[in-house]
Image 1 (cartoon, rainbow, N blue to C red):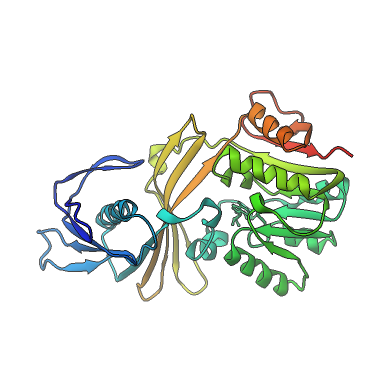
Image 2 (image 1 turned 135 degrees about the vertical axis):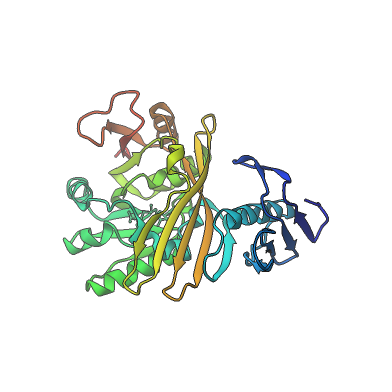
Length: 347
Ligand SMILES: C[S@@+](CC[C@H](N)C(=O)[O-])C[C@H]1O[C@@H](n2cnc3c(N)ncnc32)[C@H](O)[C@@H]1O
């Protein structure tokens, strides 16, 4: 690939080093063009195709560095080669410039509910709020699970999320159920709702979406600043296992009411055990009944905490560890990597 500013050529047979994906050979030539505003990839069909043609496979990539744009173009070209367009296939956006807190936006927010693997059981969170007190705050409430179930039970719970798109969906769902709910659009690491709570919780391991210990420490400080003295925080933590190779490239699908095919595919994964992060490149697709496709490629980052690291971060934020529980009941074993932290603010 030539490295000239403004464009480059991906030649058939060229060997490319891709961050997080090792070395890959380009099987099909592609032209990549980029400018101040974005980039597009023109994909040359393989020579065996009866009528070689060029096809636009990428849309605007956004305000990112030239290096990131080139990387994005290469990934797009390889992705397009692996999934040749059987039907009309349109635009890709690549999340190379996206903060982890902005992952659940756009097409991802639209497809989150129909494609998710499980829905959180509201019961343990309702019990937690009833025991620890109200008002309560759900962090990462997304499009409404389980906060709306708790509101339906009459519990005084507000929600926080970094994604305006997820909160819009939550408002629509609340209105459909005839529920009032107070929602705050902000990242938990900059939490500032203007009031204090008896209970703060995350429903599921959303804390592992914070990209590093420093951000997690800031989030815990902001949580402590929003707790009433004697109030309690519930933080589920898990360490993801590496995805088995057989899972990569395999799509989870759902057919929507309007006949659109919705698809989620994990493509490749990079794990860094020292930084305790795992980044999975994933693809979200919506293919309409007329064959028109929307495609969005994102990088999904998870960051985890062994128990001593989680305890040190909580204590540095002024919180006291009340208990470390196993999600399956009872106290967690010291080396459990899936656990629930219960933290209190001294009274
Ligand atoms: C896995 S979804 C869970 C949504 C919902 N609780 C559910 O289970 O359906 C994680 C949610 O956390 C939000 N989120 C991610 N990072 C965040 C952050 N730093 N601060 C606040 N919310 C965040 C996302 O926007 C998303 O809505």
